[in-house]
View 1 (cartoon, rainbow, N blue to C red):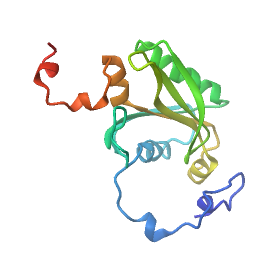
View 2 (view 1 turned 60 degrees about the vertical axis):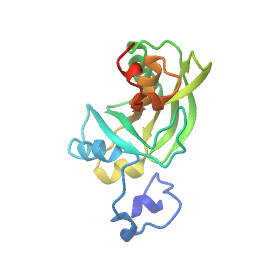
View 3 (view 1 turned 180 degrees about the vertical axis):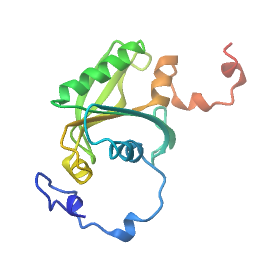
Length: 186
């Protein structure tokens, strides 16, 4: 509760009172941070690199680039002296090894990280930039209760959107299509 409400050194908190009853409710996971932070809590000294692939759920309006459920690949890296620049380097390396050349970053907000950014890849078919990852540095509210004194980089890559881009699809819903001709590859 201290970290949540901003009653610890270096924390602004989340801006409202913590409620234990609400925190006990079961929900569908909207991100993979719970699993990677659980692992991180067992390894409070660097270096640590953790990657997880999990199914996540969002209250989204379904369209050509959004699904209500999808797979996310989360990565976290803890080490001495890490900066946001290191995180950009990791993400750029990942997407270039997957064959994407055009990547850029823009500032964003995510509750677990500060500073935060989004990674975008250029979609040639649509002629626009699409977000493929949210990223940032874990906030002290997350790290201090775990006894972690080192910077931690974190990112979550939407695998479905990445696959859509890699296959050159115009619409993410095609990944779950019942079009046998397309599914058969002809």
